[in-house]
Structure formats: structure tokens, C-alpha cells
Image (tube, rainbow, N blue to C red; front, side):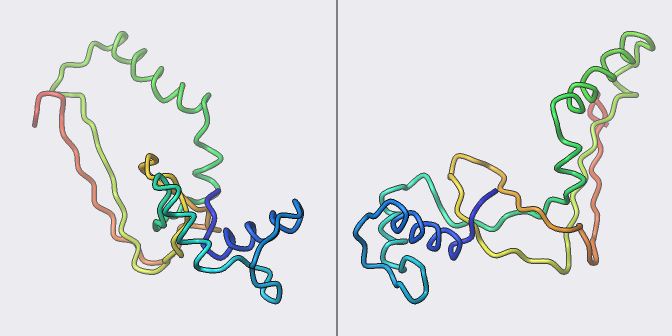
Amino acid sequence: MPLMKKEFLKLAYDLAEVMNIPHRFNKEKGSAGKHFYYDFIKRHSEISLRAPESTSIMRAVGFNKPQVGLFYDNPEKLMKQYKFSPLRIYNCDETGVSCVHKHQKVLAPKAIRQVSKLTSAETGKNITVLFCMSANGH
């Protein structure tokens, strides 16, 4: 799971303490400072502070290799069995826009397209948009 900036600075302090690395971090706060953070980000240009998307625990648990395998095997079996025409094959993409919950930004590699952070549930008011297109372009 990605770290928030505050968690990252606390981890840096704890690591320096455990490994007896000399440092000038704030011992009262038990945290590294903003200068350490900016220098770290400068040295590691592949990491940036980004806003994660909410991911419910149920969605995270349901997304695994056996489930994804079923997702791709079932349409192939149905295609062979029923020989659907391109007019009857649709691809749909759903997106939801939440009107409530916001996350703090987290540190993540720039190469990763989507950064997630677990929430207790995907609650609040949600506006859903569904786009569909058939294989023949309709």
C-alpha cells in the first residue's frame, strides 16, 4: 500500500534510528523534515505525490488470478458455442464520480498508472456513466 507523506517521513526517521544512521531529524516529532523529503524526491524522479483512487476491500479481494482467468475463459467458451456476430458483441466501460470522499496524496512510482488506497466502502453520492460499443462500431 502506498504511503502518505507524513507516514513516509516517520518511516525515514524510524529507519535512521534503528540502523543508527546519524541524522538531523526532529526527535520530538519523531519524523524527518521537509528538506529530507524534497531531496529524496529530487534523487528519485520516478516517485511523485499523487492522489489515489478509492478501492473497496471487496473489490481488492475479488481481483485475483483465478477470477481474472474466469473472466477471460467464459467469453471464449460462449463465442465458440454460440458463434455471436460482431453486432451482438459489446464492450462497456463504466465510470463513477464520487461527490464525497477525498484521499490525501501518496508517494508512488511514476511508471504506475493507477494508485489505489483501501477504504471501508465506496460510499457517498455517486454519479455513474456507462459507455457501450459493439464490435462492429455501433
